Structure formats: C-alpha cells, structure tokens
Length: 163
Image 1 (cartoon, one colour):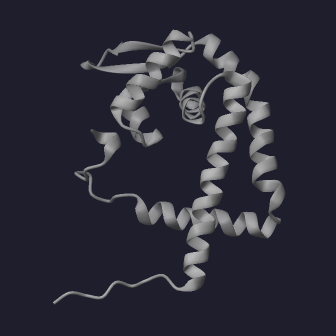
Image 2: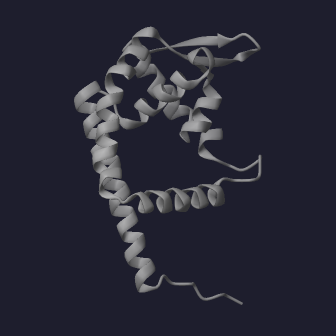
Image 3: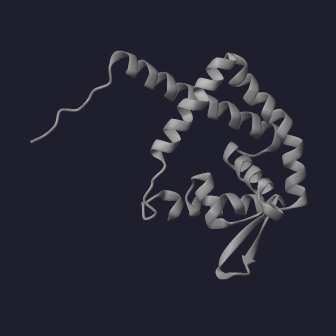
C-alpha cells in the first residue's frame, strides 16, 4: 500500500521558495564580495576561518571536511589552491601516518584579518540589517532546530564529507 505524498500547503510552498531564493542570492552575494576583495570563494573563506579558530591554527583534513560539510575530494582541491596562494600548508599527522593536517600560515591569517571586516559588513548589510532583533532571534532558533534535525545521529551514515 502506497501512502499519498504530503504536498506543501500554499504557505509552505511560498516559504520554501523564498528560502531557496534567499539562500541562493545570499551565497552568491557573499561569493562575489569575497572574490572581489580577496580572490576566493565563500567556501575557502570558511576553511580559513575554521583553521584560524583551531588550536595552533591546525586541523586534520578529515575534521576540516566534516566541519565544512564538503567532500574530501573538494577539500583537497580547495586546500591545493590555498597552498598555491601561500595561505595554507599541509603537514603529515604525527599520530597517524596516513593522515594530514591543514595549517593556516601567517600569510593566510593576514589575508583573513584583512578580509574579515568587509565580509562581516557584507553579512550584516545583506542579512542582519534587514531584520528586527526579534526576527534575528527567531531565525537563529529556526536554523538551530533545522540543523539539529538534519544532523545524522548514526555514526555510520553515508555522508559526502565522510567519503
């Protein structure tokens, strides 16, 4: 016996389409700002931020892929480009001969420090300046609920960033 699909109501459909449009436009807006100001896409900026916040500005490549939610292959390509720019270097992991660490270089940290003010201004202008404090609080709660609901509980889940 087949269960009938639970189609979206008109309100849910409008909300879904607005969400898709807003997230696509926001990501494009952030990408364009970072490409213009630093010559890197938003995902690369996110990698530099994660490395800057890690102990000794160093993370295992597998951990970086997991937290960035990108495949190891995509991460390897991104880190190769960041290495060519002199912003990141790879090091062998001392505790696991097969593993590698990504390390944020001083030059990469300087680029991040130089780029961050413009990026934060762009995020603020594109998102937070358009919302009331109550809307910001509500959006934060909504995104937290969604993230928690989508985060797999199964450690054996077939996730792209674990491949």
